[in-house]
Image (cartoon, rainbow, N blue to C red):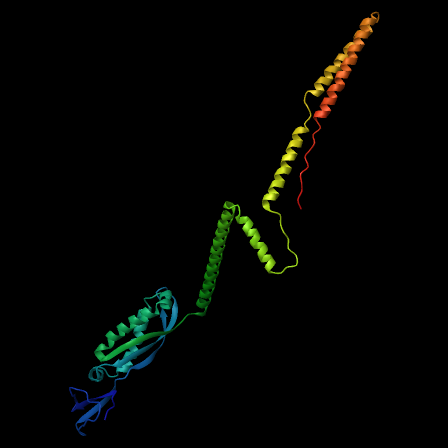
Length: 308
């Protein structure tokens, strides 16, 4: 009697019968017949770790898991001595051959494609044995300790670089947003006042005991403009006239000439009196010029109101 998942291969006088028996009850002749049980269920086995030299000259240890089942009981008994053992050995060599054509990065990132490739190669190789390979999985890839440290350092550097790039992009976007907000406020005359009122509302909501009210910007600009205009007017008015000194020098020369004429003409008193009168008139004219010059240099500076 064989189970549902089993088949019996009967050899009569050394010759295999055409069909496998089972499941259920079957009869054999004690002297001439022999039979072999074959399990049809899926069987799995682990491929031992294989030291493999990759395409980029890196030594790694890789192990895998293979799932297979007997698809043809007659062939699995007649064509191969031990189908399970043969499948395990073929899986080891196939793993070494396929991974030897891959780089380390491909082994680490393309495990699924490597597993699919191994499945197809093993299935084609075990088909004459009546074995069907259902699935192959790469179990583990072990790297040298020094290589692991180098890869960890590289990965950390890449993460830091990405973090810096993300932070720089965030600052760039924030600066653009602030620039756009400033442009909008400059284009609208009431936008700054609305922002001012919004800020006061937020301050009052916090229930602070002290609130500082800044002066409006337009009022400060008006005060600064008035102050600058008054200073320019005072500087222009305080500049002394250029011709006053020349007039004074000419008057002094005329006085000296009159004194010389008085010494030479002592006998003519009438002329001396006339000359003295002329000198008195010249002195009066000099006094008048000095008064006018002093009055023209005096400028009253306007008082600029200051707001607190």
